[in-house]
Image 1 (cartoon, rainbow, N blue to C red):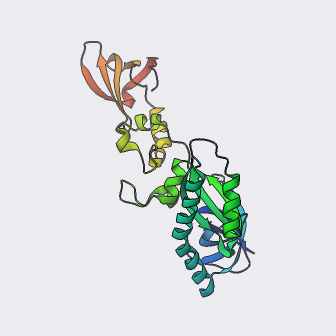
Image 2 (cartoon, helix red, strand yellow):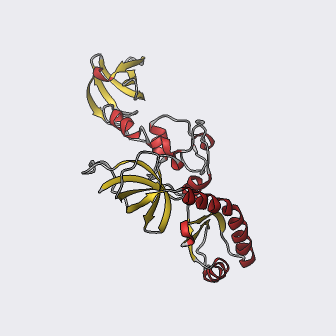
Image 3 (cartoon, rainbow, N blue to C red):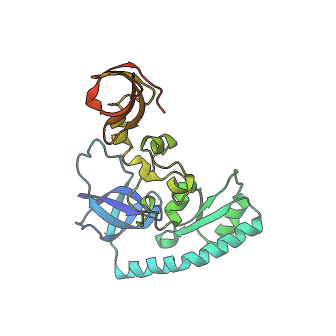
Length: 271
């Protein structure tokens, strides 16, 4: 039995799936996940054993290659999405609940209707679920999402001109901090380092490990050091060039290489 990495659902979740038949990258398949039957896209074969740096994926199974009938049904469900959204939005407005509808998703076969929403407070949607279940005659699932998940559902292109990472290759969105932006000497203007979700851009994390590796090799600003020319104080750090701007004992400002540092007398505070 073959195993594949398959991407499913509007959240583009990655699964490790068993398959009784062979598949190629890009095949559209009907897959069974913990939610039910879904459309899936085969990305690659699953290596065995998994590399140590790969996160273990949830399991599932490929049922079959999507037929013409399956594709027509999937298109019909996609065409219903805007109508479903308007109807669900109207019911939420009538209920007066403090929530904002983000997206509506139907699974193949009508097993589940999922509503994705944002809310600042806890929402008691029991009555709403009853009304939705009576209207659609199916199981209703309410799923609260955050700003990054909302962007993953709705955003298209980032400032770089490419499709947003969260809606393409990112399966897990690790935390991104302002310290990463400072370390990389990115502008601290929130409008320029924020993504479509309003949070710090995920791409700030891509090279952060490398920047931290470089930073570990150099004393930070404020450090007192001994160079080949005598004592000096570090005024600034150029990580990528592995150079230091220092003030010497005779009040000269010079740029030196990391190799010119003999020892660190007092290490400055990390920022």
